[in-house]
Length: 165
Image (cartoon, rainbow, N blue to C red):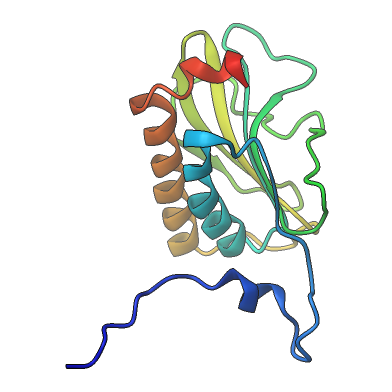
């Protein structure tokens, strides 16, 4: 009987260029314990959106803050992972309920995941400035991945534990 090949994503192959040299970084900030579960959906989202940086961010529910607080960051372009967050990344997402996706090049892709315990939660995928909108099927896949992250945040109560980060 033949051994069944597992379908594990080999990130080492992704990080190697054509000549075998390392072509980028793979650094995580905030990936301790249960939060490590965000690594795969965030990596898939970054890959789909052709980004180089992705984060789960939060801000107070009742007002737009000057800065958002990172909860989980995956950076494919820098080591260590960049945790500073530009202003305006989630512009247009401060009212309403999730999920809502904003895809307006050259801005990063931003998704409102929802609210919990007085916080508004977002997924942001950034990289080189984009000139074209994402394909509809890609936007659908990104919303699915955002739903995975929202499920981890809200149904595993990780959003409540954000103060411990």
